[in-house]
Length: 219
Image 1 (cartoon, rainbow, N blue to C red):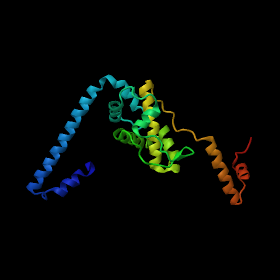
Image 2: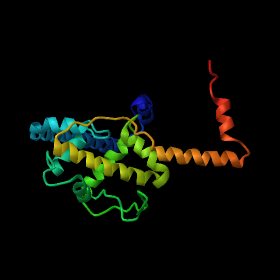
Image 3: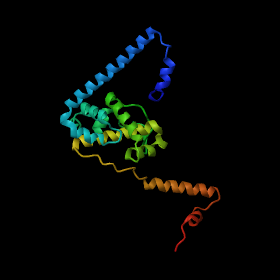
Image 4: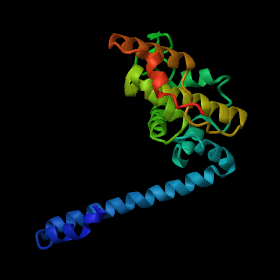
C-alpha cells in the first residue's frame, strides 16, 4: 500500500462522495486510536516488568521469541516458572506434549492436548517463527521431522522442545546458546546409504566403483 500511495490518490480523487469521505476519516481515526492505546499498553507493560528485564532478554535469545512473546511468557508462568517442578510437567500443563499415537519416536496424532490454550497458541506461533530462522537448531529439527510427520506435526514437535527450553531458562536462570543446525543421526545416514546402494544395484550400478571414480587422484 505504501508503494502505491500515488496511484491510490489518483484512483480516489474526485470519486468519493462527502458521506464516504466522512466514513473513511472515521475509520482512520479509529485505527490511530487503536495504535495509541496499544502504545500505552506496551509502556505500562514495560513498566510493570522492569524488574524482570534480564529474564526477558534471556528469553528473546530463543529463536522465534520476540519481546512481546517474552513478556507474555513471563506473565503467564512467572519469571522463574516456580510452579512447575520439571520441564515435562510444564509442557504437559501447556498441552504441547506428544500425543498417545506414537511409534518409534514419531507422533502420528496432531490433536491438541488439553492445557493452557492461550499459552499453547503462543508457543505454536513461536515455533512457526523459529522454523523460518536461518541456521538454527529448531529450524534444523523442523526440516528433519517434516518428511516424517508433515509440517503441522513437525511444528508441534518444535513447540514441545521450545517449551522445555523456556522452562530451563526460567527455572535455572541459564542463557540460551545457539548450537546451529543439529547434525544428522549417524544411524539415519547409514540407512540412507544402504537404501541408495540398493537403488543403484537395481539400476545395474555398483556403488563402490562409482565412489572410486569420484575419488580425487592421489599425489
